[in-house]
Amino acid sequence: MFFEFLGNRAVVSGLLALLLAQLLKPVASFFSEHEWDWLLIIQSGGMPSSHSSMITAIALSIGLWDGFDSAAFAVAFGMMLIVTYDAANVRWQSGLHAQKINQLIRDVFSGQPINDQLLKEVIGHTPRQVYAGVLLGAVTAIATSLLY
Image (cartoon, rainbow, N blue to C red; front, side):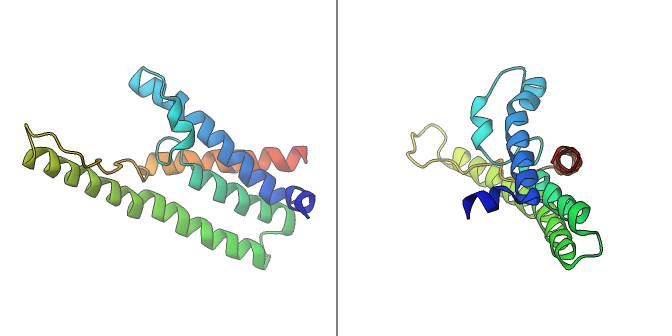
């Protein structure tokens, strides 16, 4: 059963796109921040969007192998639209809210030590990060279809 799961081309393509996106995050961060942050490999947010990359690879793989007129592709495409919209809008706004709340905590308690942990501010993606994830997912799906 496990080997059947790993034999699924869309699963392989999606997991490969997810892995590549997570491995690229420290590299992308290095070019913008000029220092290495290896924890980005296991964190959400950042460039490129691994959510967008994975779902795009899955959807495109289904289209390439089962046909773009299949019901499976229609479902995967719908999921791709939802995931990429959520990554670029809902989760991004949640991150902005976390930044404001953290600033309020800093302002209210300035000069006083606080034990409260700040909220995570990078939980979503900019549209550019989502586009990069979609592009990475598409390239991964096409490369996987050629090699599989």
